[in-house]
Structures are given as structure tokens and as C-alpha cells.
Length: 492
Figure 1 (cartoon, rainbow, N blue to C red):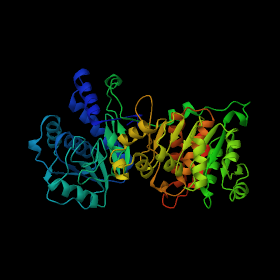
Figure 2: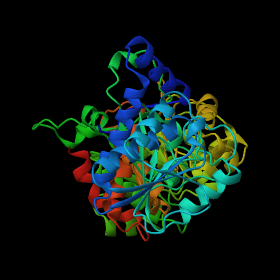
Figure 3: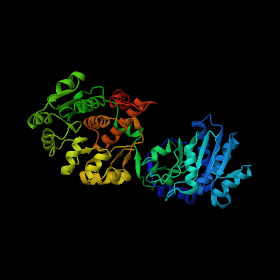
């Protein structure tokens, strides 16, 4: 078992890697299947050490073959194992038939699916249907999926949960909701997109010992943002550094009655290491912001003349948190249209941007699906149905760097596959989280990171802060809970 790799592939690419291993490297397919089964058993015993009674549910193809290997190896380790088959093992071919034969030769017994699962099983193993699924799960397979989901035991899926489209993450009628998915050869995009994260549970990866040269020509669909990316961009500071080295961030927002968003954004920027942070806000808020966080330089801005004075001192601009849709907000946005400083646009700034559809290579935009729909004159459902396409359309229309927020946040890339964040948790679906992210990204821009790095690293730092703040209690997480966690994450 290895840590999750950076590259996330399409099913077709994973199949090509598998083919290269078998045909070019002369690794027998059954050897790979046996390694997959062994990896799954090892991971299940690590993850569910108290599970002593397993039931493996086998269907068709190599996914069933993986299931028979798991059953044989688990039984050899003293686990009580039963197997239920929805497809007659005699109908299996190739490596799957060999896997069943070895299981039977060791005394394994297979029961035909009767609509019931072992109620006493501690662990169910999903070996029904694999990554090649292209049509909805129906009939007895749908009933089996429903039975798995209704069972009290834990669930481990082999390679990908049955019913989950391995490229899009779409649920194909019915899908297994696993506690653990052990995936093989390459990470599949569907594990991280759409409903993938709800269905997959914890994801473990086994490369099955396939040589690296089998992957050299493989094009990734996405790239995970990992520790290496953070370490590369967040190097230790020089001992002689001073605040002027780390950028002056100007945050524009906080229209009448909405001071909280800029306050969160400003402190997030400071906690992420910005040298100085100024806030341009409604005159009624400036004193309150300074009173609650004196390190922020809060300025009452009534008109564009006052804003221009602040712009002249800034290195990076963040606009949108709590901005609103008033005439005051529109006048401030108009001043920014021709500004060439690195900038982050979020929240209400994106609604203003949708009206002009201007392009800027200096700009990072950070829409959630609803805002992305406004920017594309589409619907949130359309955005969510194909997040990769939505990301591409946003980048084409608005240029710069695009952060498409949501479960599995995506970041556009000018060089290589888009970035995908695999950290974060549903507790982060709460007010103010986007404002914190905007401050983090703006601070990283101010410290000299390129726009793409600032966006990708900012997204990952934000998500990890959310995970640390949540711990084991996601519900009730506040955006301000992330702020104390930022320092330890950016000082790796």
C-alpha cells in the first residue's frame, strides 16, 4: 500500500497502464489481480481490525475476480468468510475464472444471491461491478447494492464502489456507499468528482508494483495538491526578512451592514503571512474592525477618490467579501476594471464581473457552483454535472486562474492537468469559508507566489485548516475556527 499519488486518471488511461504492465513488462494479469486482493485484505485488516466475519459479494468481470482473491486470502488468515455471487462463477472468464478456481480449490464455497446478506457480517466487500460500468445498475444488482447500503457492517469497495461512474463520479442509478475504497493501478477521477467522495469513504491506493515506465506516457486528468506542492512554495523565511517583503494586501468589501466578511478575509491574510493588510470598507465599519483585530488597517471609504489612495499603496487586491450590489459597490468595482495588480475576485465581485465578462491574466476568480453558473449564464446543476468542463469554460471566458469551489475544488492550470483538492470536509459548508479562502490566496500572492501556485496552495491550506479545526466533529464548524490553524499549516 502506498500514499495517494498526485496523478488522477481516466478509466481509459488506467486500462492502458494495466495493458502496458501485462504486455510490455510481461506481468501476468492474474499476478496483478492477486496483488490487488492482497492489498485489499491488508488494508481492511488495518482499517477494521475488529472485523472477524467478512462477506464478499461478487458480480462479474475482474472486479469479481478481485473479490474471490480477497475471500481466499482472508480465509487463509483465519477470518470467517462467506461469498455471495450474483453471476454464476462458471460464467467467468480469464483471470476472474482463475481467481474463482483457486478459491474453490482451497475449499471456498459460493452461495447464489438470494436477496439476503449475512446479518452478522462485520465487513462487506463490494466486488460486484468495477470501473468499466457505463449504464445504470438495475435488477438484482440494484437490490444487492441496496442491501449493502442497508447493512449494519462496514463496507470495503474494490477499486471503485459499484454504481459509481469512474470518470465523472455520477451515480449510475444505485451506488454502494463504502467506508473504504481500495483502488488499484491509478486513482480514478470519479472517486473525487460528483458523488465520488460520498460513495468512496476513505481511499487507499495500491500501485500493484507496476513499473514507473508504464505510466510515463499517461496523461493525468487532474493532479492532487500534495505536501510537495506546499513545501516547494512555502519555503522558510530568511532571518533578515521584514514585513515589506511579504506584500501589502488591500481587501475591498464590507458594504453597509456586512462587515464580517472583510474581517474574516483580513485576518486570514494576516494568519497566512501577508506583510500588511488594509481594508477598504463602508465608513460605518472601519472602527469596529480595528477594535476586534488591531493588526488590520481598516479605512472608511466613501468614494473612488479615497479608494484610489489605498490602491496606490497596495501590491495585491482582494475584492468581493461582503461587497454587496449597491451603487457604492459598483463605483468601486469600476475603478478596478483597468487595474493591473494581482488580484482575487470572490463573492459579490463575481456578480459584477458576470455583467462585463472582462478578461484579465492577473486575476484569480473563486466561484462556488452558483456563482460559476452566473458567470457562465448557466445553472448550478449544469456546472456540477461536468465540473471539468465548467472550469475550462470559465478560464476561456475570464482568463487568469479559476478556482471552482465545492467538494473536490478544482484549480485551472496553464501547464498540465488542473489541480484537484482532496482535503476538506462537509463542515466547511458554512458562512464565511469563502472569505477566509480569499484572504489566504491574496496573502500568498503578496508573498510572491505565482497566481496558479497561490490558488492551488491556498485551496489546500484552507482545506487542511478546515480538517484540523473540525477534528471528528464537522457539524457546527465556523469559518473563524480555521484561523488559528493556518500558522501551523503554512510553516511546514
